[in-house]
Length: 89
Image 1 (tube, helix red, strand yellow):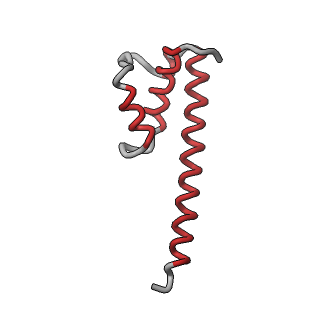
Image 2 (image 1 turned 120 degrees about the vertical axis):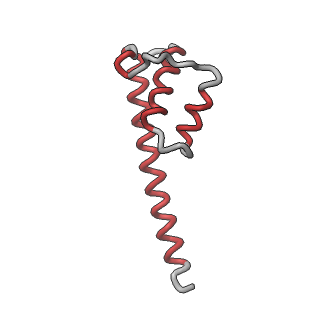
């Protein structure tokens, strides 16, 4: 993998558009913020990425999905803790 701004923008844009958790998610907000400096081609797809772009895309998607799993586990733990602490009220 090497540094190429165009590959990075394409890969991140596709990763955010494919792996966001809804319109209130951080990934969706970042994808919308990218519109200030990146206008994707209507033909942009995972198949159109270069080898470098595809590698970046796969890593970003994996990171997003791992982070989402972590956040969900953290939310479940917080709900359980809240339920235990306030069960008697």
